[in-house]
Image 1 (cartoon, protein in one colour):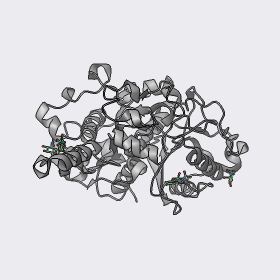
Image 2 (cartoon, rainbow, N blue to C red):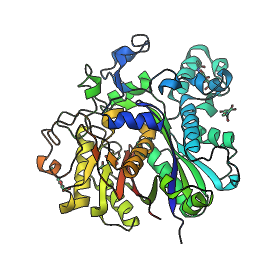
Image 3 (cartoon, rainbow, N blue to C red):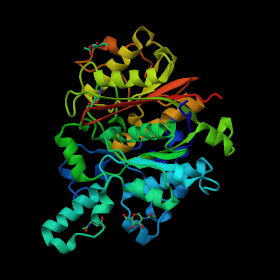
Image 4 (cartoon, helix red, strand yellow):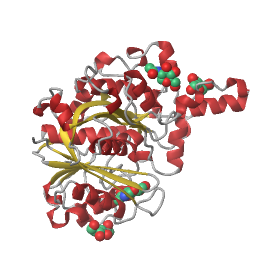
Amino acid sequence: MANRVVVTGLGAITPLGVGVTPTWRNLLAGKSGLISTTTLPDYESGGWAQIPSKVIGKVPEGSINDYKWQSQDHFDKSEARRLALFTQYGMVASKEALEDAKLHNLEGIDKRRFGVAVGSGIGSFHDVYENSTQFSQSGYKRVQPLFIPKLLTNMAAGNISIKYGLQGPLHAVSTACATGLHAIGDAYNFIKNDYADVMICGGTESSIHPLALAGFARARSVVTDFNDDPQAASRPFDGSRNGFVLSEGCGIVILERLDHALNRGVKPDEIYAEIKGYGLSGDAHHITAPMETGEGAYLSMKMAVDRSAISPEQVGYVNAHATSTVIGDRAENNAILRLFGDKATGVAVSSTKSSIGHLLGAAGAVESIFTIKAVKDSEIPPTLNLDTAGGHKDDKADNFSHFDYVAKVSKKKELDYALCNSFGFGGVNSTLCFGKFRT
Ligand SMILES: *[C@@H]1O[C@H](CO)[C@@H](O)[C@H](O)[C@H]1NC(C)=O
Ligand SMILES: *[C@@H]1O[C@H](CO)[C@@H](O)[C@H](O)[C@H]1NC(C)=O
Ligand SMILES: *[C@@H]1O[C@H](CO)[C@@H](O)[C@H](O)[C@H]1NC(C)=O
Ligand SMILES: *[C@@H]1O[C@H](CO)[C@@H](O)[C@H](O)[C@H]1NC(C)=O
């Protein structure tokens, strides 16, 4: 018998705040964490001013007492210098998640059966940029000895395992924007197949850098139509969607073998949700563009539902990957429609990227947390800025008339099962199915 795997702790850092509680509260209240680059102190000197896209999602700076971020609340100066920002986010969100799961003192826990699977899509963009510049301008001696270890995408996972002495599986997937979801899915498989009892898993990203934004702008992936109204810029499924918003943050989930959690005294009503199934596929089509029909997305959702041994009509909510790009949202919409067929009416589909933007390698982890909270609290977060679903001139309007997109306002709904989708450059498609925990 495969092990049952449940969620016992959550931690998050997002443009809506530091911590799961403020993030979830702001999300349900319909708040947006998106800002204009014109408000950044280095707008001119840093090179932001040349870039046609002006909207980003940044973790708010300030004291942890106001649910904001500053390194000195968590690390002393010399420690902070040695840790890239994405690693710092990973360590701080892991601490929150461990405390939430009442695992932080690790008493009586077998650390050889406790692992870490935390990935990043890009790693430390800042370190690469600065050291490249230094090397080119001033030569070999200006390259810092910690340059390579600091930038590696698996360093958040490495530093988390060192901090808590965890000797179980140490893993860090990097599949672009599907990283966070793959990390949770892979950790689920480790526990299910008995490689570990407990896993700290998720994704972390901190690549808000003018060169990163310039790259996405040159690829025509990021929004340019809403520079004067940043909070309106991310509008998944809407007629005037025009590209995604580059954002940052971290999502960490504690996964645990069900009987391990119960044996150490976790009460059934403290369990957030159970992972029922995991699906992965490749579009095998193009490095950045989806197939019109959303073939890859359909296959990963279908696999997640089949492996959960449920039928699509038992799914009440889909947290869509929908980044607010014209063709990506359409393809995913078509894929969801194909999965549900004539059972589509009544399924809620929302994209929380409308509030927080696209957290790249952290997106799938933070959105998994939102899906888990929706299942646990029976409340679905909204799709902000949605005026006309499928209103783009090349959309087939009828394909957008079947779902409840939870436009603008959150909604109460009992959920037995919910899906979370996450897709990435390279043709990656992945889905997790979460179920309400029942003994
Ligand atoms: C280079 O990399 C190191 C280590 O990651 C970092 O501390 C430093 O700030 C980077 N920048 C420069 C200009 O050396
Ligand atoms: C994290 O890793 C860095 C090397 O990249 C190391 O210098 C540092 O001591 C580690 N910090 C912790 C808290 O594990
Ligand atoms: C509408 O959705 C169906 C079902 O997924 C799909 O086969 C079809 O290609 C879609 N049409 C357009 C124009 O997107
Ligand atoms: C599947 O992944 C590809 C990879 O880039 C992505 O572009 C596409 O949007 C995904 N499929 C759908 C239907 O969204």
